[in-house]
Image (cartoon, rainbow, N blue to C red; front, side, top):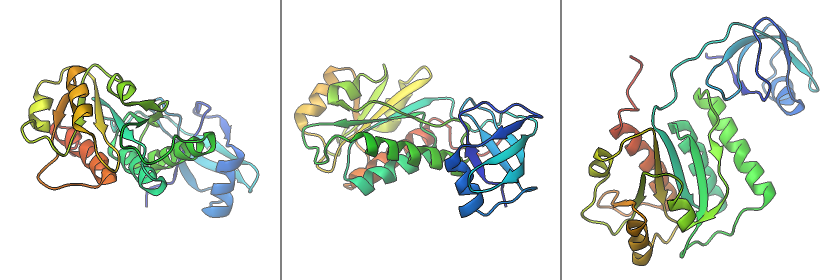
Length: 244
């Protein structure tokens, strides 16, 4: 069984003790019931990770002896931002979790013409950050995807120079064709709300320079579309291959 992984805000230093936050300490001592002598892995989002031995553990403070760091190659070369229209609570949280597991670099919530969900409160955004962090820990990521500020559709389209919008009514443009024209290290994937995008929004995306593509012959739920868009893009870019 692989050791548990934890995100830390302080950069670990090999050979030194690292004291974990109260929240992480409670998780280790109370929830996971790890004890002194157990091994975990910590990472700070910079691309590296460090094995560490628990030296002392109680529900208030856990301290670790940090081992030698390493930089595994688990992150995608193409920095993908998923611009996802805000969905109803559980569905949006599912997208945050699965997009993080798949390998996005950032997630940008936005609202548009057919959005049903309201803009997020500060407490809701904090919950989103926690979901992203926990998904990064679980999936072996060495970075934690950034949760960008909420925007409207023009703001979502302007997130990167290379943008692909997924629209269920598009019949000619395909993701594979759109990705053939992609160059550089960043890509923005734009996915709509429960009711999809309107024709005028698709036209505005084209006018802004985005490629508008379909996502297959069947109508997907909004949360399914976001997760599928990321998986397909990473696959087509060769980012889903196994270790060399």
